[in-house]
Length: 593
Image 1: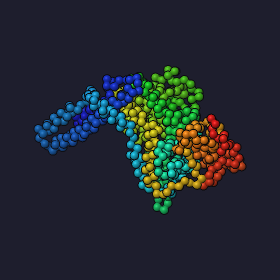
Image 2 (image 1 turned 90 degrees about the vertical axis):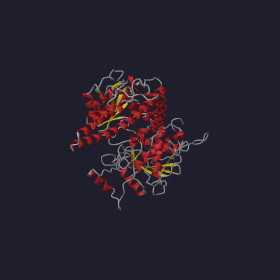
Image 3 (image 1 turned 30 degrees about the vertical axis):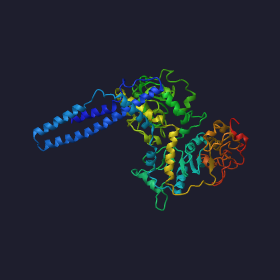
């Protein structure tokens, strides 16, 4: 059996000994760095192939060992046992842990590198969409109505979105008033997808804007499964609803939507993060500025540590300052903390530090290992961390949900996974000893995410919606009272609580329109090239009217806000009659009009 141990050692070297310092050197320019990524991908492919070959050899040796033991038990003569033993020793010697693996021939490496880089850039959206659509061979209108009940019962946002003859129609069932700064971000995924894919089929969907899925399906959990069956018993009762949610997992029936961070406002807002259309290119550039050899060999997390899982991570960091740094920072700290950790010389000090400093993204990329652990809802910065060109250490504990793109990533290839926070220090020490492997994973993860721009994101949504449309068992027709949305500014005007509020966010960019007005067209109120016609979310969709929340917010005589509608379902949702904002007149043009 010692031979099997030696083979296992050989397999580790085959998989992990990916890049030697002499094979890929740090380069100052982005194009040259891209060559490094190509080489990393080439070597990764070769080593994974070698690992597969070695695994097969291990299986063969295991059979040989079993035969040897069986032969000994049956009293086979010593000569045959000696032959078997010598054969095992011979194979073990040939695959024992080598000190290094030869580099590929330059010509072969160049061709394979180009091919592998293209493979990284291609996301198999059809496969991901098909797998998520597996529970839904047919979609009925009744399931949409059930979906509205399901997401409206406990969601800050719940919307019916319909594409009909190339136009988008919106009906709000929940659009909570205090978070309207991010209401358009829930609708922008389908608007941008329709703009880039104008020939999408007619569809009718329900979208829940919560952090977590809405439709559990866990037959191994007695309580959960019983509740699921009570709510949606089938037969003559309701079938499970079809709902899109920002995160999914194998234990839910939800279909994947986009987290609101993908389409943050393009103008300044309280969370301060740019939308992915801006952020992706910037992060890609920032990540290229830090050479591998210059990165600090410590695992780092900066940001919120409010979740129980991140509290454990912080405690582990406090006890492992040589391997970890957790820098606690809340959103509210941004106005108070004005110095970076580097300016205070706290960037290389491990352990757990609280509310002392912040880090720019480029400064975060100076750490060789970046931590991704469970937040209160879910962690949405995974995609950003992968662009650093560092190894992302993915702590599995508490990570119940995934975003859509995570189904196109492989642990051990694009990132390194550990089971718990307590496993991080040992993994950091191991990665330090296997720097070639760490560098290859970092390069592969960055190469993979470099292609996930807004175009790729909307390609996924187009594929998912097309497959969804093929399963609809009804003809799509816009709901009575639905609001047509043509442009991003239509959404800001629709959700704004005041004209000044709208001016703070509108871009007056008709390039976001599905059907932009022709050049030279005369634009006028109320939509200025868009489809806006004075709509507002209904009051009952905007407030929690429970006795402990805002039970009187929708009092018609004393409304919480007149920039909301009291019209019943099925009627166009114009604002309260007492509203004094001129949403239909010239003043509605915006900041520059």
